[in-house]
Each structure stands twice: as C-alpha cells, then as structure tokens.
Image 1: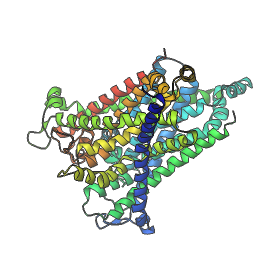
Image 2: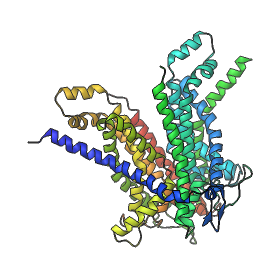
Image 3: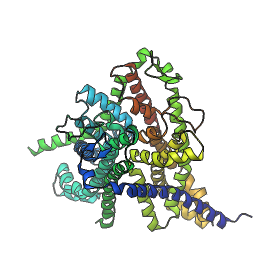
Image 4: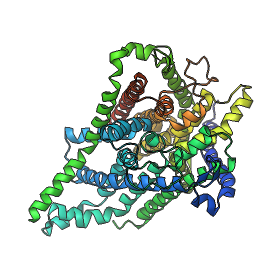
Length: 282
Length: 288
C-alpha cells in the first residue's frame, strides 16, 4: 500500500531541495564576489583611471560612464514610460489598439539585448549619425528599459482606488487635473520602484552598449554627449576575456562595484515596495 | 487656455501610449534595412541551412546552421536543468514554504534576476569552467554544458516568478474542495493546483527559454565560441547572439559579413517575437 503521507513528505523534501539548488548558488556567487573583491576596494581603485593596459590603476572612467549612460536612459524612458502607463490605465479602452500596445510592450521586453545593440547601431550610430556616443548608448538603453517602467508604473497607477478619482471628478476637476493632483501623487512610490528597477537593469547590461558607446580603453572622462565612454559591465567583460594577465583582484573588484551598484538599486526598490504594502491607506 | 493645455497633454499621453508599437516596428525595420541586403548576395535558404560560418574567408561562407545548433544545444541543456528546478521552486514558494521564509526566498530569486549577465559570465569563467574541465577530463571547460548550467540560472528567476504567480492565482476553492474530499496537501498540489495553473506555468517556461535564447554576454564568455556543428554537449559551441556580439566590433561596415550579422539579428527578433506572442496567449487565455 502506498502511504500518501510519506509520499507527501518525500515530495515536499524534493521541492525544498530544488529551492536550495537555486538559493544556495546565488548566495555563494554574492559571497565569493564580496570576499575576493573587497581587498581591491581602495580609494585609488575607485577614483583613478586604468593604467598599464588596464592591469593596474582604477576604474573611475567606467563608473562615471555607467552613471552617465544610466541617467541618460532614464531621462529618455521615464517621461515616455510614465505617460504610456497613464494612457493604458486612465484612457485606453478595451480595444484592438490597446491589445496591440500591450503585445508590443511584451515584445519589447523580450527582444534579446544584443538585438537592441544592433538596432542602436543602425538607427542612432549610423542612420542618425550620432556615432558611437553616450547619446546613442543612452537612447538604446532607454528603449530597452521602457517596458519595465511602463509595467510597474501602470500597476502603481491602477492600485489607486477608483473612488479617489470619482471624488475628484465630482468636485469639478478635469480628467487631467484628477490624474495630476490625485492619481499620480498616490502612485509615486510604485513609479519610483519601477524607475529604480529600470536603472539597475540599464546599469548591468552589456550587449546593447557594445557597438553604440562602449570604449575599450579611454583613460579620460567623456566631455560631451557625443563622446564615447567606458562602462562598468563592458570593462568587466574586457578585463576578464580580452586582456591577458590582469590581476584577479582587479577583476573581482570591478565585478563587486558593478554588483553593489545593481543590488543596491534593487534593494531600495524592494524596500519601497514593502513599505507601500505595509502603509497602504486604502 | 486650460482647455488647450489639457488637449496638448492628452495628445502627448496618447503618443507615448502608442510609442511601444512604434519602437517595435522601428527595431524590426532597421534590422531589415541592414539585414535584407544580405539576401541579394546569399539566398535565405543557403544562409539558414549553410553548414559553414567562415565570414572572413574569400568568398565568405555565411551559413548559420552551426550557430543555430549552438543556440539550440545550449538552450535545450538550460531548459532541462531549469524547468524542473524552477517549477519545483515555484511550487515550494507558493504552497509549502511558511509565510516568513516565503518573502525571503522571493527576495533571493529577485536578487538572482538582478545580477548582470556579465557578472554571471565572469563567475562562470572562474568557478564553473575549471570545474567542468576537471570533472569531465576535457581539454577545455569552455563547453556547451557550462553555458547551459549558467543559462539555467538566468532562466530560473523568470520561470519561478511567473509560475509562482500562476499557482497563486488558482482559486482557493479548488484547494478547499480537494481537502474536503480527504486529499493530502501534496495530492492537492499534484492533481488540482498544478493542472489548474498549467497554462501559466507553460507561459513561464516559454518566457524562461526566451530569455536563454537571447542571452549574450554570459554565453559568449563561457561556451568557447567555436562556430562548428557540435557533436556533443561537452564541446565548445557558438550561439547566434554571441556571434553578433563578438564579430560586430571588427566587421567592415557595409560588407557581406556586416549584413549577415544583421540578418542573424532578424532571425533572433522573429524567434523572440514568436515566443512572446505565444506565451502571452497562454497567460491571457480565458479561464474555462
């Protein structure tokens, strides 16, 4: 006779093992990078330019480059993404057009990152003649993170209760006034979460910037939007595969800076989200 | 005056609303613009079924069959690893885990999703690759297998979070009814909840696989990049994505090679389009 209780115990144990199989390696990856990367963390490493063919010195230009790219991407994607989210949640009706917009968003988030790179190359770098530049890279990254921003902002806007809108409209406010003064202020934390997640994604991606902005070795800071720039993820790729005999410490150190940047943003997003869930007034 | 301002704002909102459609079309058009030029020189069938990829020989041989095999091999390997583990983990989080550890586990999964692929590739290079080399006594650890294992970890967060959503949205009544009939918790999961969530889980699996096919950096760093048709999973392979990323930097703009890389981009775009549309249909299937 099969014993259902025992079957259940065995099954649950297997499920637990599977979960461990994901969570433990994640923990290990983070621990290894911290352990081997921390010794590299000196003031000089963070503020100096790479020297001796990237085998010594610091990663300052790469950090600055990534900050520029991420800011550019968000400046482009946040306004469009937010307005698109407002359109989908406040204006769009159940129609074929709405269905197609949603499908387009799903597709935009599924396009392989290297295809974004090709697209950025052919549209921004070649066709619009921006050249390999911060502008071209930021726009490419901006289009890539658009779906994240639209989806999270839309969720945030849709959780604002319908009654808030009705009260505002009944007091004679116009539709836009209602959105501007009632809906958006209540959706800010959620929109912020989406923005930060988008920032994290843009900071970590390599493939879209390969041909649109990333400089192999450029020991100075970019001076205009049309300059090339180094970027952290590409720098990590370069020193771990393209340049021989780089000190392991420098590789781990670069990985650590990138990881901390990305995880820090995600952590903030997670905290904001849990705060919203706790504090929700309605 | 206010009317005019609101009119402008509402138009802006509408334009942003349809911007996504505009960008998808724009991406496709610009891939076509550069990629279609190839098919004047090299017919599509020869491009897709050609067995050799020697882009810099004279004349260049631009058959992407080895690259397709590379992508398929790595993807199948990653799917075999990530689907059972990912779905099992989703079931554990949704049904078995106590409430407190649930939040912790979800955060862990999100953490994995957030790690940039170049960091995973780097970690794979320094830990997984030597390990594979040693265990299987290979001349190099840069193999399809290493790529599959690493990619499995990139697919798992997608699979777990979407499958967990699907399991979570199964109506509570189903579960209560099964309990009332005397079923154990596991029997309920296995016979009631999993079948009820099956279309969502299928979508989760498809989106996970979509992520694997499109992955570039980690794959380029640890699969060895040999553009030959692989005989086993313990050989180096080169995927479609890695080919674009590795070769675009050195290619002469306007050459056949340049057009061929864009044509690979078209292939990838169509694959991801098909996967996402199908997965979306499964996710929004009206419940019976």
